[in-house]
Each structure stands twice: as C-alpha cells, then as structure tokens.
Length: 495
Image 1 (tube, one colour):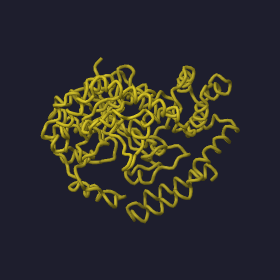
Image 2: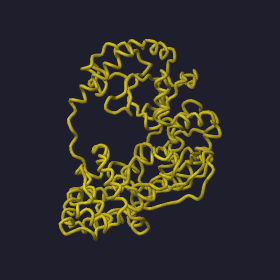
Image 3: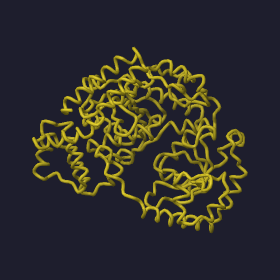
Image 4: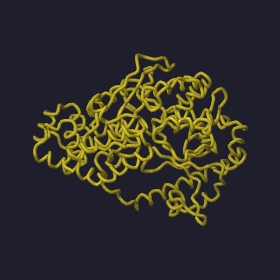
C-alpha cells in the first residue's frame, strides 16, 4: 500500500489540559513526493456551552467562540470528520510539532466523542510523523543549504504583530518557530496561527528539507516507526535528537539503551555516554527511584539517565558518523569520551545493570500511590485500556443517533465495565443531543457543569480585565466578545 501524507494543524481555545479544545482544523493531502492531492480544507468546531475559552489563545489566533458557534460543526461531527481524514488507509498524519500538541488534541477529541483514540495511528497502514524533530536534526547534523533564523532578528518582528506581547522574550540563539523558518527561507506563510496557512507553510518547509537533504529525509521517514526505533537502539550507541536536550547542546545526545520500563514497554531508559558510567555500575536497586526519577541536589545528584518513548517517532541513529567531528565540537560533545564510555558497557555489565534497573523499577512501581480520579474529559490515559466489552460499547455509541443512543442506554443495551464511560456518556449526550436527556439526567448534567465552571467565574472575569489593561484598544473587541460568551455560559448553567 502506498502512503499519503495528511498535513494538518489545529488552532485551539487553549494550550493546557482541558483548554485544548479545537477551534479550527485544517489539512491537505500529498503523496510521498509532497505533490498536492486535492485542495486544502478548513473545519471549525462549535464550542460546548460548559466551556470557557482561554483569553490568551483567542488573542493569539483571533478566533472567537461566537464565530465557531455560527460556522462550526457540533463537536461530535467535527471529531468524525477529522477521524475520517486521518484514518483513510495508508495515511501518515503529520504536522509541525504535532506529536506533542496536535496529536494530543486529536486523541482527547476522539476520546470525548467515543471514537477510538489511537486506531488511526496504526491500523490500515496508517501512522504518524512530525516535521519538527526532523527540522532540529537537519539543523544539528546537516545545516548547510537552509537559512536558520536567529531569535534576535525575528522574535521582535513577531512580537510587534501580536496583540498580547511577551514582556520578556528570549532573544538568544536560533528560533524554530514555523513562521520564522518560512520567512527566512522565502516561503510564503502570510497568516501564522491560521491553521490552513500553517499547513501550507509546513508542506513547503518539508519540501525544502526533502530537496536539500534527500538522504536524511528518506532515512528519517523509513526509521520513524516503533520497531525501527527499537532496532536502532538495540544496535548500541545512538545519536538522539530531542528538543528537551536544549539548543546549546545542539538538541543532541549520544546515548545507550540500558533498560525498558517493565510496566510501559514504549518507554526506555538511556544513559548519556558523555558521562562515565562507573557510578551506574555500583547503583543499588533500592536507589533507582531516588537517583533517576527525582531532581536530586549537590550531595545526591540525579544520574544522567533519560526516558525515550519509542512510539513517538524519535530521531535515533545508530551510525554515530552522522554526527561529524565539526558539529560535535560546536556543541561540546566529546566523541572520544562517548566511545570510551560505551566500551565500558561490556555484555556482562549491561546484563547486571539492566537486571538492577528492572528490579528497582518494580520496587518503585509497588510503592506508587494511585492517582486521584480524573475529570472524565481528561481521563484518557488514567482510565487504562478498555475491556473488550467496553470497546464494543464505544463503537456502538459512535454509530447511534441521539434518540437511538438514549433509548439503548435507558434500556440497558449500552452499559460499561468502567464507570468513567458512564460519566463521559452523560456529557457526550448533553453536549450533542441535549433534547434526549431525562429530567434527572439534565439535573445531573447541570450539577456536573456547575462544579467545573462556578469556581472559575470570578478569576475568569478578572483575567479578562487584566488582559484589557495589557492589550489596550487592540485587545478590546476580542476580550469583550469573550466576556459576553462567559456571561452566556454562566446564565445557561444558572451560575
């Protein structure tokens, strides 16, 4: 099966947790050679009336809940439309920093609307990728042929255009903001934080990277999958590119896999090969949690062990020669020390270290305190994987009309093993089919919504007032509209 890329981007009503509700989605499909297939498309999502949008996000995007209510799809229909595009056989969903942001928006969108959150990531030849770490890898390893904008040259220009300005912007080093990279390289990208404009900008940046670095592009594409990543890690030392490593170090580490997490095989532990591993060899299992998973202090420092998720398309390459001596020197990486430290991991020592770490991780797991019950909208990860029966019920919910769903639920034909689905279903029905609620269900829904919104009333209005002072006349139309929206939410909920 040949693959296609579906380049996509969300604008949202917030950046954190439950605020990350989509306002706008845009996408365009290309073949593997980045030739467009069809036209780009834009969808808006109608916001629910038990939700307060983040004022900061609305000031950034200019998208208001009133516009989305008038022009958008109900959230359940919006979710189905996005799911259909990303689930078309052979589709690789891709964006710019989508693995950390957009994919999370998709997962929780699907979760709230009784669609399988992960299915489009693996079934029918589908998958996902992310241009952002590839961009970092090109800058760190093969920077020639592309203009890399400096923050001091570009961030002030961005701030000048924004309604809500950063009072203390970081002007050191390079910026990898999409709008800066496209502008520096002569790529048309007229409306940053408009989803379709961002999508076309991302495709054009990908085309530039593919054209100037064809071997790196192809290698990264072929090694994006979980199994390919595991195989690279199992070969020995790897060059790892990750944004969390930091720009001064080139977003680079030379690392060695030392164990897989026993209760989460998608997470592996890596040793920083710039550091002598002798201290690791003498570590006791009872000290694993303290020395690896806490911040430590001067007297008891944290060991240089990192966690990598093999299912998030990380850039890891077992051919250390991909990191040239010049680039290594530029970022302060001693390749000689990397080689010497790697040689200390003899098969016998590696076996001992792995056994010790697994024992320590098991001990730490046994002492874990259960997390408090999460809000149903945010319970995707904490609720665990559904039972077979619950999976069947979720599929049934998605297929039913509002009236048929209410009838099936009231007659017991829809029932769940995990009670979180019952709470989620009440919200799903209240948001999408409120006319099907019984009086008792409507009362429960109002109590639930009030509990989530009532405590935020004063602080939300206060935040609007503070932002009005910061943004002046520029921000007034948006903040005034958000005030009107919030008052409507409060009235509807009887707050």
